[in-house]
Amino acid sequence: MEEGSGRMKGFYLLLVGVAVIGGGVLWYGSQPRAPAPAPNGPLPVAAADGFRGYTMGSDSAAIEITEYSDFECPFCASFATVQMPVVREQLIATGKVRWRYRDFPLPTHAYSRYAALAAQCAGEQGKFWEMHDQLFTNHQWAQTGKNPRGLFRDFARSIGLDLDKYDACMDGQRYAGRIQASVQEGEARGVKGTPSFYVNGRQYQGRSASDDFKALVDSLAKKHK
Amino acid sequence: MIRRQAIVLLALVGLLVATYLWLYKIGVLGELRCGTGSCEYVQTSRYAELLGLPVALYGVAGYATLLGLGLAGLQPGLASDRRVSVLLAALATLGFGFTLYLTAIELFVLHAICRWCVASAVIMTATWLLSLADLRRAPSRTL
Image (cartoon, rainbow over all chains, first blue to last red; front, side, top):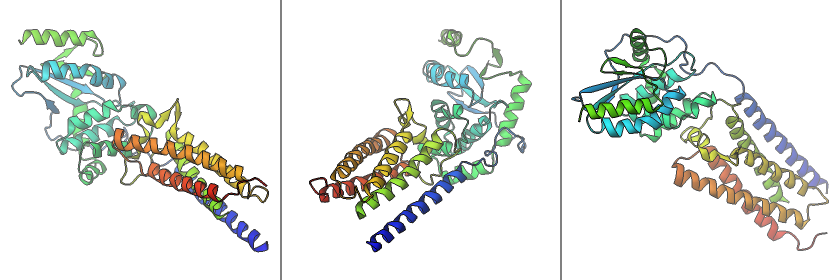
C-alpha cells in the first residue's frame, strides 16, 4: 500500500515537473523579443544596381504599365487578387502590355519592406511572381501583426525555393538597396500611396480597385487591337 | 492504473502543445518554432479555425478534459470504475477522429505538415490506444 502511494507520489512529481517545464517554455516564448528581422527601420542602402523591377509580359509590348506597390497594403492585395487576373488575361497574356512591378513599402507598415525583401530573394531564384502571388493571396499575415518570418519561409518552400539560398539572402538583406532605390524612384515620380500606376510613364489617375481600372484595360485593349 | 497514468501524462503534454499553438493563434507568441515543417502556413490557413474558434482551442479543451478525467480516474475511489474508462475511451475516440480529419486536411488539402500538429496527432493516437486498452481491462461492473 505504502509502495503504491510512493509510486503515485513519484508520478505526481513527474506531472508537476512536466507542467512546470512546459509552462516555463511557453512563458519564455511569450516574452517580447528584439524587433523582427528587417522591419521598416533604417536599412543599409546598397548602391543601386540599376535594377528596374521585375516585369511580366512581352518585351515588345507597346504599352508598359508600372505599378508601385506595397505587399502589406490591403488595396494592393485587393488589386493583385481581383483586378490583376483580368489584366494578366486580357493584356499581358495577349502581348499588349508589359507589367513592371516596383516596390514602394510604406513606412506605416511594419513588415512590407521585409515582404519586399522576400519577393526579391525569390526573384533571385527566378520566382519573383510566384512569391508575389503568395504574399498577396495569403494576405492574412498582414492583418495579424505577427512576425511573418516563418510564414514567408513556408511560402518560399511551397514555391520550391532553395531555402538555404533564400535564408542567406534574407539574413543578409541582400536587396535592401534595390528596395530603397525603388522607393526613391517612386518618390521622385510623385508616388503618394499604393498602388500607383504609370502607363507609358504617365500617371494613371483612376481608382485602382474599381471599374475605372477595368475601363483603362478595355480602352488600352481596343487601342492596340 | 499504469495506462491511466500514461493517459494523464500524454494529456498533459498534449495540453502544452495545444496551448502553444493556441497562444500563437491569438498573437501571444510571435513565431512558431517549426524547423522543417510548414507550421505557420498550416496555422494561418482557413482550416486552422472551426466555427469561429481556433482549432488549437478545441485541442486545449479536449486535452484539459482528458487530463482532468484521467486524474480523477487515478483517485482510489474511482481507480476501478468502469465509467471512467468508458468516458476516457469516448473522449479519446472523439479526439482521434478529429485528429484524423486535421491530418487529412494537412496531407491532401494544404499539402503541408505542421510538426506540432503531428506531435499532437501522435499523442492523441497513443491516448486513444491506451484508453481502449484501459476499457478492455476495466471490470464490467462498477464497484
